[in-house]
Amino acid sequence: MRGKGLGKKAIELVLQNTKPFKIKAIHLEVVTANLDTYEFYSKIGFIDRSHHLLTKKI
Image 1 (cartoon, helix red, strand yellow):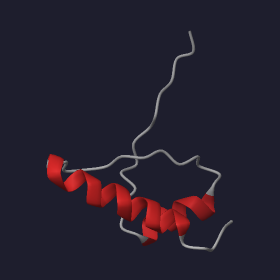
Image 2 (cartoon, helix red, strand yellow; image 1 turned 120 degrees about the vertical axis):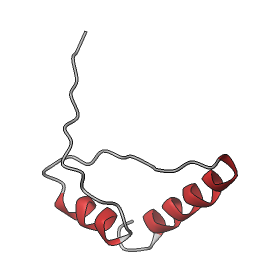
Image 3 (cartoon, rainbow, N blue to C red; image 1 turned 180 degrees about the vertical axis):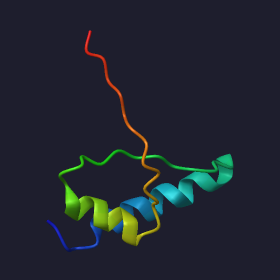
Image 4 (cartoon, one colour; image 1 turned 30 degrees about the vertical axis):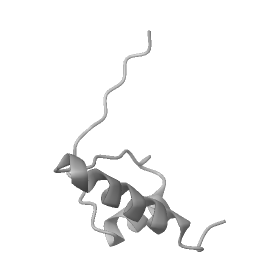
């Protein structure tokens, strides 16, 4: 299903639906090795903040 614009449409829908709530930022996680996804989100305006996601399994 890649290349059909569904991801971009989904993000647009999320952004439209956050406006009434005055949300100032959306954060997402991309696996480091997933370069295609990283490039996709970069193209539509997401910025790499060079933060680390830390997880502790319990």
